[in-house]
Image (cartoon, rainbow, N blue to C red):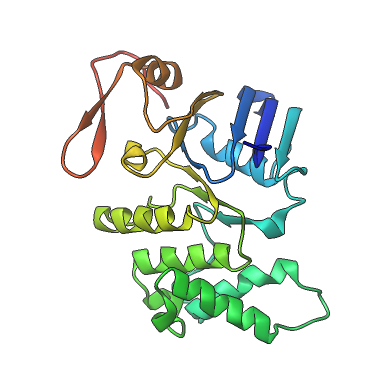
Length: 256
């Protein structure tokens, strides 16, 4: 099967001495589509930032593509939950994607023809080639999210990390969006953080539930024991319409 493209062993992380993640173990193989689920505040985004090298663990070892997180940034794409692109900023979709080339070019060199070709290819890959000259503020939420994925794809990454990528788009676009990720998964490993169990429906190949520690299953299914361990509440999954929904049974526990 080969070495994992992502490996975390005995990882601990705390903010201001408050534990966020404890004794996390995870291995992700090439070509996987991993859905990272869990309650708000459970540590999903923190785990993603540790894997990206944006945060460092207090204890434990993390390797991404055989190296320390952040050392292989050219080979990794990232779509964050929040962006700093404002609606009124006079920047086009093409410009946004071109920004993805900035960290990987010499400071003394301007953008080249190969940079522009990579931008066009990335936009075409997500179905936005015809809107590349449109200002980002004039795009719909779904179109804007495609542009942000194109920015993550512009360096042809081997792994694509996404943090709550459908949090600000409507349900119709969510189906289109995960269809796109499924296509991309044919050529790269996908790791997506979400609170929505619908990512398991015909998309994910494996799942990790995160709530301070991590519960992993190498198939796109959740057991009652796994859900209870992750959510600390009795959770029932009910499938209806094209997408399943999460229903909490009667319980007294709560998460702030």
